[in-house]
Length: 285
Image (spheres, rainbow, N blue to C red):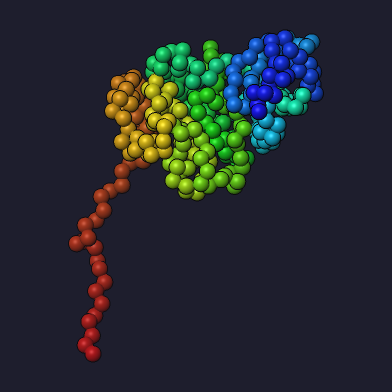
């Protein structure tokens, strides 16, 4: 149904989309998925470029807009979150107007032939995404779909990143138990096992994303939950070897810093033989 609606609209380069805040002209299509298309657009009378997500399923489009409203109280630049400008309906599709970004971490890895990413990049991604997750937690929201596709370069030269695609975001108290949220390679163990959930599932997915970027390989398989759990217990030798080989001096320095920041070890416990035990008097009856 989605494809039929999109074709009926004759979405093509040069097409105008009439929004609430202006008229947008499609310059090119950036990506396409089951939801519809993402178009790179200009707004008439403005030199600015925009990314418009054209969602053919009206209900899904409305749900994504409602999810974006959950985070509207947060500063998108300070918290490294994608900025939305407006949402409008156009000929039976929903159009969400976002800021234009560069490329996703997924595209970045593909272009680099899945080579390991320098630690400076990984640090920048980690610091900025930690801030994003901290901000989401402060308002009780869980992203639910953190993966390489949804972390994008905002500015590659200055290593600025943003978290995108809040279509599955929900309030923490509304997290569904027993449903298969998150992409399989990034799915937290508690999701797989049907346990109670909180915002920690986002932290797990981010950790897997960082490991994937750092090593150049997916840390876990993307076929079945069983294979994912098995890989958690016993990571593939290829992943362990690659992580071990990458930037050992930097990793060793980081480990030393972490170790030096820990409190001094506690003294060993006193042997039980030296402890004064109370022995009750045995009375005859």
